Image (cartoon, rainbow, N blue to C red; front, side, top):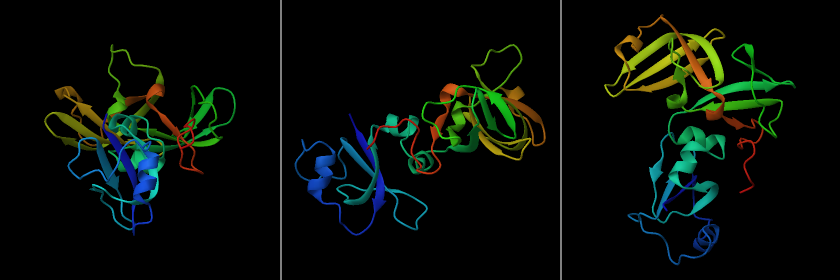
Length: 212
C-alpha cells in the first residue's frame, strides 16, 4: 500500500540509509517523485503550505502511515491540522464521567491515558447536524448559531459559534435545502464520541499512540 510521510524539509541531514531503515530497509535507492508507492509530504519551516517531495531527505519525521491512517487517526497534532481541515477543542477530565468542553460538562468516556487537560480533535465532516426524528450516535450535543455558510453544491461548509464563543467548522455532504440556514440561525449539532481524536497538549501526541 501507499505510504505517506509528513515531516519538515531543511538542509539534508536525514540520510538515504536512515530513510530506508525507517521504512524497513526493504527498498534500495531513493523513491522517484512519480512513484505510487510513496508520497513525501513536507512543510518547510516558516511556510504555510506543503509540497510533494520525491526522494526528499527529512530532518524531522512526524509520522509514517497510509493516507487513510494519517487522515483518520493522526499520531500528532501537527499532522492532524496539516492534512485536511480539523477542529481543535480544549477539554478537561476532572474524574468520573464528566468532560468539560464548550463551557459545560458532558457525560462521556474518558480515553485511557488522557491527561486531565486534553484536546479534542474532530474532522468537520464527522460532526452531525441534529434533526428531529433522526437518530444520532452518542456524543456531545451542542446548541450553536450559524456564523457563516458556504454552499458548494455537493456540500455545505458551516462555521458555527457555540455559547462559549468556540468556532466550529462543519462540512455537510449533499445538504438538504432545509439545512441551508442563514447567518444567525440556531443549529443543534452532535460531535460523536467515537469520532474524537484525543491529544495531549503538552506533547502534541495522540493519546494512546504507540511510540514512533
